[in-house]
Image 1 (cartoon, rainbow, N blue to C red):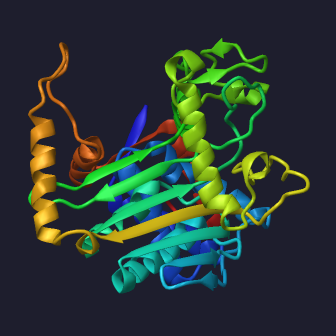
Image 2: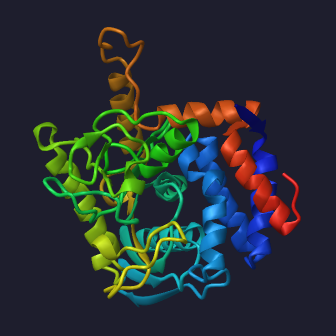
Length: 358
């Protein structure tokens, strides 16, 4: 059972909730734009379904609604940003804007962030670079829910990577993916639907493959991209580790099993080696490598040729990274955003708490 809301309806409600917890008008609008962009692009696990989670973190005094976000170290092409425990939805665009400005000045910009929180979909931040004829990159560490290959202990987050690359006439190439076989949010969607997880997504507490969508609540773990060693999970493990190191070890955030958990009811890890969650952003000016128009024409050629690749049996066409999200965004902007009943109920309860109607 789903309800359908317009982009405007969800945005207005979300923005009002962020204002109610003390965010400025500017921060509430920015956080809303990032959050609802996930629903618009079909990444329902990272959109308004997370709104009550942010509120609970604020109630637990783990999110600062009025942060003093600042640069604490920098060179001409790099910076470290302290998010002052702010919403990652606000801290991340601030840091990405710095990366873009540094790239504008010296060709590339790289920013590592500490003392932040969950930042929504990585793709939003990477795509900020596109308007400036730049390649954008974004990644973040996250709650430790993932067992490294050959382990039963949860040590890493889903640790996504996003890369956005401009083209000329073709839409941009936008890759945005977790370094696990599936993101935790997809498990949460299955839980709401009372459905099993596909084999290869999770393992039980003893390290055995499982289809139980509630495995994480029973001391199980998510699996790295590849699922098991025979299918290359050591590569997913390596990718997740790189994200953790770039985002958190490099910035001074908490890493590995010490990353702050998203659910407010989960106790914070003891002896945390850093501050909050960490992110990492990059921006590369295309014309630092070759003329931008020339590059974008060749990107059109690249994309066009891949679109012409012969589909395998049972498939209509070959997709380019970013195609499904772009098509969903176009459809949902016109026809509305479907929201499953448990999330609608969650939002209505949130609205009742703050006196805002959905």
